[in-house]
Image (cartoon, rainbow, N blue to C red; front, side):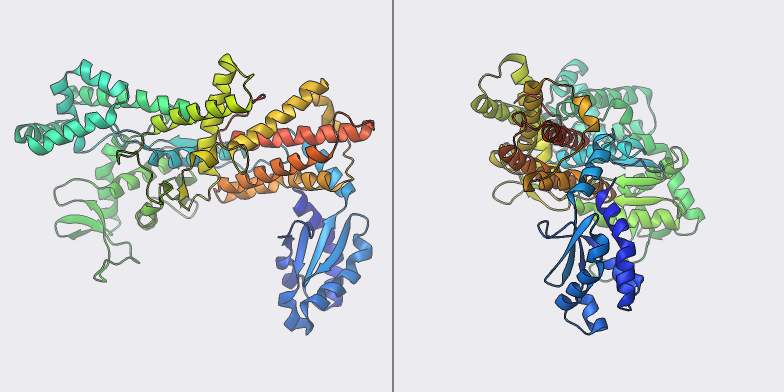
Length: 582
């Protein structure tokens, strides 16, 4: 059903025969053939430039000679042409029609299931008693999209929300909670004033020696498992998570309380990490600290760079916690793959952790760990996005603003949409716009947060794709027929707009797989936009409801149906809903 691959498979025997006559082995030319980079030139292309020295001819002459050799045998299903040293092969409409028939009759739209593996996906990871800000947006929505892709491909995806809920700051947070009183503190946290709570505690810790001493003593009680201290710690965690869940609900992501695996979950494993590293002989002492030297990294002085496992004061490091996570995910969860959706600045940290985990035997050759890194969200001035007051923007406030702006845009575009329906559409469009602006950017790059662009009904935006879907729903409301009856349609493809749309629809499964294989949602976004753009051109130039020929009319309705299903599935994989009216 992945038609480019099928087309290559169909033409390979013919090309193999032709290339043998030129004394070129399959091992030489087969790796060169692939999807055409210029859509108007063909579907598949064979560049002949690397063959020039072997055949002692210009690439253009080689391409023309190959075209002459294969043209007759390809004629039943494809046309061939030579352009600038490339052999370009285009599937004939009949071939394309069969591919579309396979897609529209398949409830998975040609996307095949894989042999199931168990993945742990580490993402989102806010800190207790700290606000979720715009910096958490990327980790949360990229991780959510990858989870949805994994599950659609048949894998088991274990969502691991590695919440920061342990460590020395909790001494001061618990003492501040006691100073305020539990009820007042719970209310302050519950309404989302997490930053204020944390800053008040921090200010007292710095300025009040008595409070600082109490805080340090409280850390000892917390780490020692004192029941009352643990109860107070639980109040902080529960109230913070209640607020985080509000944000998750607004974003429409899959995370729940069952997915929380805070740092506290691995606390008892930390001494085990030390013992295991010691047992395999890679733990060393350096300036009073227990460290591992993974090899391959040096500091500014050119000396080997250590990874600290236990600090000189006996405290553990992030590296220790991440190694404990790997032990847990291998031995308790039975994971095959580990994905860490964390910002690019942590690249070296994860490379060192993964290397030590392999050296220590926590992971073997059957396991694979990937740092799914991402860039920053920038303001229009090119700096990290912040509020007018210079503070990091709260994610909840950002999402509320997106809904408000979407409501204004919808009111301008369709003032007849009112009441609860308009509220729901504004929410769908606003949240979708924020998520899509993030996911449509190549994740390793920074991107500029631009309200006007992301909420535009033109260009590569969620509102543009959502509007294309709503337009198709409008067509079917006017038609009034049974959309299921289109599943067995015969596609009649005659004009250029039908063919362009058909090619992009047929390519959906392979683009989906490529996006999945590389953990790159932006590739799928780019293709969804190309489908919506092709549909707009098709709709402007081809009669659908007014077409008098019944076969052509049904074919065009089927193109609308397939377009709608691919847009809905593609956006759904991003966690973005599609309204039927806009």
